[in-house]
Image (tube, rainbow, N blue to C red; front, top):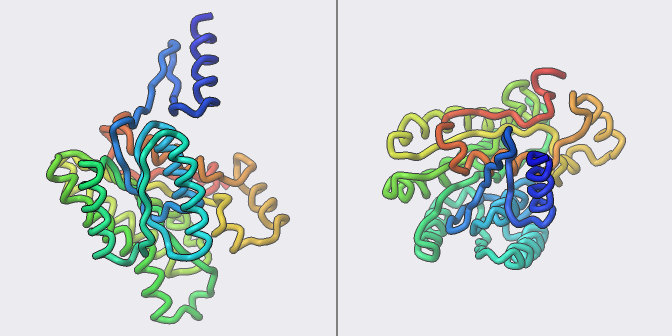
Length: 285
């Protein structure tokens, strides 16, 4: 009876969207509470990035994000700002391309001045468009690597000095399950995402002694604008869902839940790891 009451109570709390709970045996609940903490999401206006910002806010944390200066991202940013302010948290956004290393560093400094501290970084920026291997030009290769790999390096390099100074910080990189399969629609994209594996381990080796953790989340087939652009036919997306062992496509919140956990103190002894959030598709299809 006590266990049932506890579970019902926590579910009601989730429905009210006050805080995010994980459940343990014996009726005890682990509460991820980000009140008094602030986070930076690179690429946070839409899709997975916006959902990460939303879940951070639902846990009581302040969220800042970068976005491209286009109509879709400006619209997504305006909606997200309204939503997060309604949750009673502070937020900030900057129209900043992830490949702008100087701009990213400046935005980090501004956030530290505003909030006194940044607790975590999530790199969500990414771009791909299917193209055969032999048709990829050197310029296209450099562009995809610049966005999907170098952008993560620029963001980490901007925030790590602050983390190192306060001897604490968490980084979550969003990769792709294509690194295990060679998929992803084009070689430059999957190669850049594979590079995040090395970046993840390098950051861990160099900065774990300073209390800085870094982990990688590999999504697969998540219902975002990127997936819909690649597979605009709903029937094709249904076919893809049927290939997933869990028999559905992923949702942005599936990735956000993993990212929020890895940002939290409950993941305090987890670093240098790669987590596949893919419905079992990568290894069990």
